Length: 484
Ligand code: NAD
Image (cartoon, rainbow, N blue to C red; front, side):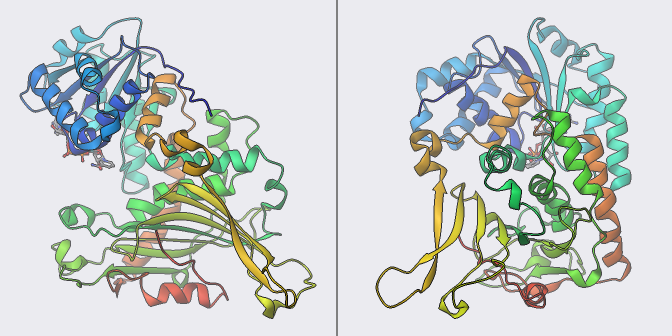
């Protein structure tokens, strides 16, 4: 398969927070990889902007170190890295101060795309947006990229939207949810809307339920105090898992167009039912394996914040009435695995004896590790001795199916940054989507806070609290095993 890299237009990209963890781990290495792949035109410039008192050489050293650490050996070509570094400069700016903005303005060129990546705490978004516009650094065509978290409830998300809207139009604002940049997540749309095979049965009539799992093996050590203010619902469900749910549940958009896709996602969020307390299980990981538990890591002995949540969600519309979506996500679980499983119903009439091994069809979409899809189908167990059924996967691992290209899937951040330069907002959250997701999440969070509920403990390296298993069992269903 021939690799197709279509260069984007030349750009000036300013990274506020250019010396931060996210810039070093994702943004700068990602940009280098796009440069290496030939997608970033030579005339493009990357400008780091942060508080640190660095010069160009100092920042280039930081970028070179980040490439060394986070780019795989096969792409680390000295000449390439040197060419990339020539495109990099730095300006020392305090987002809340007055110094540095003139210098930044002088660095911007006309005739290229201007993008500003806000890789800083959301509390600084307003100050930066205001200064970009009052200093005439951003114009009506400039784009801004903002990181999560986008608010911690509806009121703060609305305030953040209003702050940005005071200086930028919605078409200029790119709210990153890196889950949407994952290859498999986009493939979900391709599978649904480019094939006749699935869409006719993509509804409550044929789908028994959907499971979405995002399991991590790491705990919150090192950032526990920060995490304790959010928890799994705010950190994972309201944003990433909500986006996955939308892509599974949405109606076909009339066109693969940013607003058409986002309109359909918004309709799904608005159709979500409130979630009953008995359909929610929250957990905190316990100490074990020589490591502290959530309580120690959060440095808050009285913490009621969840490091795990499982919930049953209903979408009240014609397509999904009666088909629950089970979501679960947690830290310190038995394996690092994210997947979506569409679990189909039984055939209406079986000519085979169920005792002979029948299992339901499942379409399993793996987000990590090993992005790919598996369609679980029944076949006859080989050999003589009657009709015994066995479930086998029709395995589509991208790395296998697409050869070298499949093995070399760009990181979500790389793809999303290139989409910003192209001016394509399809994979970014619109302001009304984020607000609708908070409007759904707020009463759920207020519910357990109001009831003073404490999360249940679960063993590190497990699949979560026992009650989460019961959430499924009492409906006559079971979670898929969490494994890499
Ligand atoms: P960080 O603390 O490592 O870096 C913060 C950066 O902001 C630094 O470059 C610092 O110099 C700069 N900064 C701080 N105050 C400033 C000021 N007043 N003026 C100018 N620059 C200032 O943070 P991070 O982990 O890189 O996160 C950045 C943003 O990305 C946050 O909003 C975070 O929530 C979000 N985010 C981070 C990650 C991650 O993996 N690190 C993942 C998702 C989202």
